[in-house]
Structure formats: C-alpha cells, structure tokens
Image 1 (cartoon, one colour):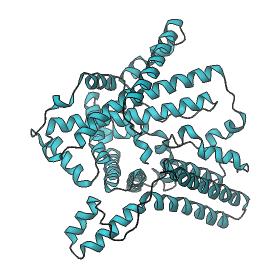
Image 2 (cartoon, rainbow, N blue to C red; image 1 turned 90 degrees about the vertical axis):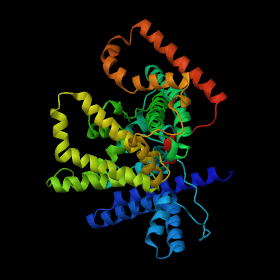
Image 3 (cartoon, one colour; image 1 turned 45 degrees about the vertical axis):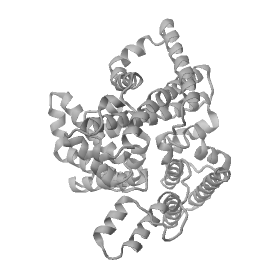
Length: 446
C-alpha cells in the first residue's frame, strides 16, 4: 500500500510529540499532585494509542460475535475464542504499525523516569526523536531505556574495534535469521498449516521443536543485528538474550529471554506494585498481573492471553514451592527437561491462531496417537543439519566453550577463522535471501 509508510510515520511522529511535550510539562511542574496528573495523562495517551492500533480489531470481532450470537452463551464463547469476525459492523480493519509496542514502551519508560527524577528532561526535540525512532532496534527491540543511551546521543565515539565488533555481531545475527530461523520456519509453517486433528504425536513434536528453535534464532538474530548496527554507529545496547534454552527453571528462562521486556515490566510494573515485598500472597498477585500484561502486550488474541497466564501460574508455582525443589535437585538434566517442556508447551499457545487450534495441537503432542503424516516426510538434509546446528548453538556450545574462546579470541588464527565464518554467513544469507521467499521477523507483528 503506497500510503502505509506515511500512515506509520504519522503514528510515530505523533507518539514522539506527545511524549516530548508531556515530558517537558512534567519536568517543569513542581507540585507533586500536578506532576502525577500529567504523568497519568501521558501514559493514558500512550496506552490509548496501543489499544486503538493493536487491539481495536479484536474488540470489533468480539462485539460482532456478541451481536450475531444473541443469548446463546456457548455459541458466543465459541465465536469469541475462534476470533471469527462477521463483518456486521462494516468497520475496516486497522493496519498495525510495525514496532508500535516497542517504541511506545521506550517512550513510556522515559516519561516515567522523568517523573521519578531518574533522568533529566531532554529539551532537544531532535535528540528525543532519535531516541524513539532509532532504526536498528526500532521494530523488534531490544527496548532501550533513555538513561542507557542519553550520553551516547551526545558523546559517542566511533572506533575501529567497536565497528569490527558490530560487523561481527550483525553477520552472525543475519545468519541466525536467514540460515537457521527461516529453515525452521519452513518446517513449522508446513506442519501448522495442516488440519491439527490428523498430524499425530511425532509430527506435532517436530512442529513445536522447529518453532521453538525458529522463534529463538529469529528474535535473537534480530537483536544481534540491532546491537551490531548500533555498535557500528557508536552506540552500545544492552543484551536481549542470554542463552535462554539452557535454563534450569522457568524463573531462569525469563531472566534470559527478551531481557529488555522482562526488565521493563519488572521496573515499571512489578516493583511499583510492591514486587516481592508484602508477603507471599502479594508477590504471587504481582507476578500474575505482570505476566497477564506480558501476554496482552504480545498481541490481540486470546492465545497470547493464555500464554501469559500459563507463565504466571508456572512462576507462582516455582515461587511457592517448586523452585526450592529444583534448586535442591542434584540431577540438573531433570530441571532442564522440565523447563524445556514448559517453554515448548507455552510456544504452542504463542504460535496458534486460536485457542481451539492450541488445544488440538496440545492434544496431539500429549495424546501419543499416530497421524496421517510421518516425521520423515518433513525432514530433508537441510532441515536435519539446521536442527543439529540449532540445538548445539542455542547456548550449549557457547556456555561450555565461552571461557576458552575469550582467552584465545585475539589470537591471529582465531581472528582469521572468525572473519571467514562472518563472510560465509553473510554470503550464504544473501544467496538464500535472493533465491528464497520473504519471511519477516516474527516480532514485527508486535
């Protein structure tokens, strides 16, 4: 659509102006009550933008289902959970601006920090606009707090070593996305496109395994590319992933997965609610609310809501009693299997289009029944090699050999090998992009 770019640009510019002038108003206000009122107004506008552009279509679908179903509660629930819009209202769907959740949360973090007097008001509109719209991490993170780069906006220094480091990070990130994530996507998408009732247990597990690897290499690959481009331009962003699939508990997983989003909710939601202070009951309540909001943040679908609730229940369970058992368990492989099964189960909700599809898929995974398809029919040499490489490079090799690599990485043979791998990843990625089909980053939809 020719006008779509201008439409998205208008939304971003509106967000920049609202938050910029809102911050100025908060910074100039001395009275505590007035500061709170202005903060509330700016946050309400930000959340209003998210509701309109991210959740409006879902709201219309639910309203249409209610209008067409009448008083039949079972039919109503079915239509709502199926996300089946009838078009009765005749309201056209709103196109979701790419990256709106990320740049809105960035702007909100700055507003709250100004209110809390953790950071100074940025009076230069150009610098503030650069912070909100900085292109490397604009559309899929990591979410960058203003305090992390405020000095870099003015005093950053580009160096050869930083550029080389960024180049390396970018090439590896691109390889993650194109060579691994896109290969896993071919398998996952082909399985998810089938009628879930006939796929069978083995194929269901292959599909979720492929998607589990796809979303990690897709999202962490984008983060690597963003961090790499930032370094090439003189910026240093914080890490967004720390080998989450090597985690031994769900709590550890969320300390390693999408670190910037987890940190945002912890600092701006969990701690203000009271955090872990005030007893076990309030702590569990706060965890539940945070992951309910995390699910809602990810998308306008009941599957994301269930995904957030699923993790909320798991984290509360670990907080109450299971975490202590996992810590004392000497056989850590059991902890890893438990955590991996939880994560893969959660990805079923995340990947499914409807609650019914998720329920059916889980039924196939844990039902143990044979289906109409064989696992071998979805495997090729390319897929098998990608699965082996993906499993090994999901953090296991890096954590085992990371210390050794740090000691020898500046040696000439190692540097030469590094460079060769970078060039190979870049060339192969370009060749695959030219010969393949377009496969967008998963988190572009958020």
